Length: 145
Image 1 (cartoon, rainbow, N blue to C red):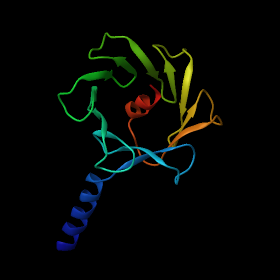
Image 2 (image 1 turned 90 degrees about the vertical axis):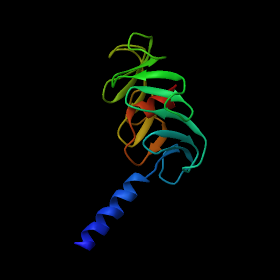
Image 3 (image 1 turned 90 degrees about the horizontal axis):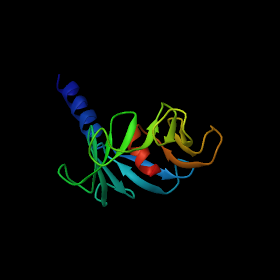
């Protein structure tokens, strides 16, 4: 019983303190540009670096804090400027492509395959970022702005 509790504690602690790195270019050993910890997008590598954005279910805020200025609203498909679901759509997510403005047929700016964020439309285009772990699409869209 104690062994199970210890293992459960170990895995939960590891999951809570996990960090996902967003690396420049293609490769798991390239320079870390951003760190995602589940709430904060930080500049560079580490839990103590400058917080660029705070991201919750609906809003993306400037800096660290749940009450800071809302820069963007995210509804799972559209990234909108400011706070509100009727504001201007900056980017559209269709499951693979990040598109300009509102619409599933607009110009493709970036392609996401689960590991690499690529410039333009195509699975063989230039890799901008390598992401090893799961990162929300809203974080990827922030990198595109």
